[in-house]
Image (cartoon, rainbow, N blue to C red; front, side):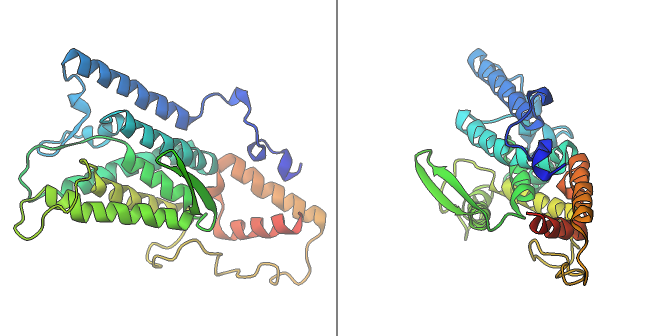
Length: 290
């Protein structure tokens, strides 16, 4: 069986697989958005239990706040981001890693938001939205694709093409700048530091927490030592040139058998189940058998 014959390498998606976990998540978020519309029209507040309250947070609210969104645009941007990067994580690493990454991003984002508000006036602000989880998925999905290009529609009108590396830098710097110059001084009463711009109550600190969660999970999935610095995706140092480490290249049949074994492992456990040595071997065999 060649690589092109495998189900997960084909361009088309089999209908018998049913709805993806990512799509199911978006449907749940849309359902809660409809409930929020009903709540607003009825003049009630029956979803207050899900919001994360700054002064008296309940234990379930650290995750449940991700189910709610301020308005349609809030839901739309998070939904589009989730659809893009969520599918990549789900297909490459599996459903379990998808849920763990999404949940960790939401949780660490909420903790970051709550902690950075300590010492402020404590006006019982609330946090809602799944964007921190989307940021975590973004890192896990794209951190090993830094030199690939992506085209985004700026304001849904202007197409902009840039490398993923720069997209991640832009999002990170925007979150950091929004936290330093808008959210952080806006939640405190400092004499020497005031908000420089209004970011419409965006939880920039939660986004930073989501980025951190994604970075930690990505390093764990790729078996990269946490204390080895901030270096991004590299070939395993133990085999810098796999071809040279084998004076006699294996036969074509042996190479295909080894490639099939690695692809079967990806099919069963996702790309993250491979060791760094196996990833290097997969790259070598794919190039050799083209």
